[in-house]
Length: 164
Image (cartoon, rainbow, N blue to C red; front, side, top):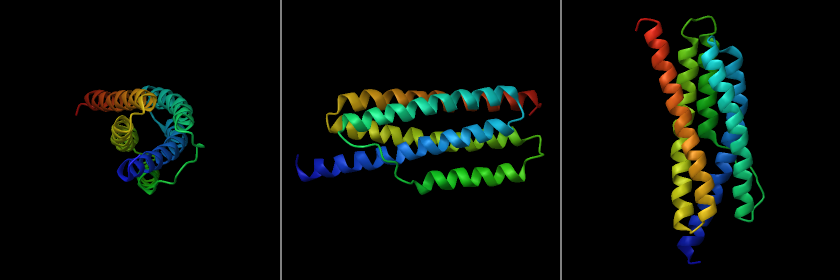
């Protein structure tokens, strides 16, 4: 490997470790959000995505193995900030009928972060010729895109339901 490729391999592992952390944190947050969601539809969507997120953690462990590395989460302040800001909004809106809108907005923000992060991971893996990593992470990227679309659709449906 030339020095540039070595640097890209380090970047790939660093981003992988951040996403591993992110997915673990998001699994906790999704359960918390589902616990306070007002609508059954949102609760079910959050719990379904939580199950998918836990499966993604296992897929990321397979990526670590593919790269010959131990799965180690790397703290990601960006995700921590998104989740903390969301928790503060949740507390402020706990008795508000628009709580579900706040929960959806919070989840969408994290999904966008994950979508961008997985797209970058796929690009790096492709450049490094890591075809199995590309396949696994492309699959996760599609799942995140579908989760984002489902959240957006639910928000639109709830807005229509409220006459907005």
